[in-house]
Amino acid sequence: MKYTHIIAALASLATTAQAHTRVWGIWLNGVDQGNGVDNYIRSPPTNDPVKDLNSQAMSCNVNNRPVSRTIDVKSGDTVTFEWFHDFRGDEIIATSHKGPVQVYIAPTSSNGAGNVWVKLFSEAYTGGSWAVDKLIAAKGQHSVKIPNLTAGTYLLRPEIPTLHEANVAWNTNNARGNQFYMNCVQIRVTSSGSVSLPSGIAFPGGYTYSTPGVVWNLYGTDNPANYQAPGPSVWSGSAGGNIGRAPPPGATTTTSGSSPTGGTGAPLYGQCGGIGWSGPTTCASGTCKVSNEYYSQCLP
Image (cartoon, rainbow, N blue to C red; front, side, top):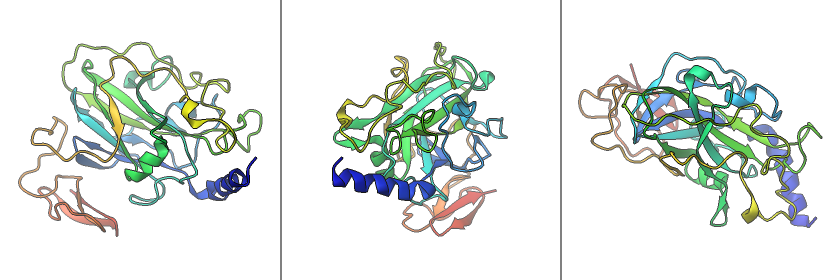
């Protein structure tokens, strides 16, 4: 192993304790829906990864239970996920945690159990960069478009498998192994699409320790251009996705579940201030309240 590889491996070990991540919230057609932790996201109590592929936590992480809010969307809407480490606007995830970024969907009625998870988006290594590198550059944001689905409630499951310790399978050495980060976001499709989800894969069960992309020597001789993200191909009915900042709000992006704006200024649950913020600093509805130096939000 080259010295540079040794140094990189040691760096990954040094950052492991402070490098974890989870989803803070979503943007809908460029409109911030606010802090989703234990609100519309089935959030784990910590940002620790799941490494045991046979754990029930592979579905929606360790705290899979219904939460109070569901976000209304329509076919064609853009849902942007925003990851964070400890607080919004921080380092997102350690740069050593290379790997793909993926999104799955399943009917809420399944509670994530069974062969129900259908892949909507996947990016691994393209243009000389890992998907996680692009995610960090995009301030933790990546998006999918809602397909032409039949009306109903669904779970969106953004996922980041990280490879800095994945040269050995977890069931062989539980001090190492691929680190999986995932959360489940509750949405309700209110448009009357014609497409039903096909059968998908199960979590747990869909990934094994022999699944391509689960074990990978990031700091060895494995060519990243040959890396294959775990899981099936993206569903042919997917409307696509990308890694990048949320799009600017459009004039017709309000959904039936969105709060009315009631005038000029940021919408309810939208950002209204913080270091580097160049958007509106008043609220069309609610009051602008400081969360931290990087983020203020319009709240009821």
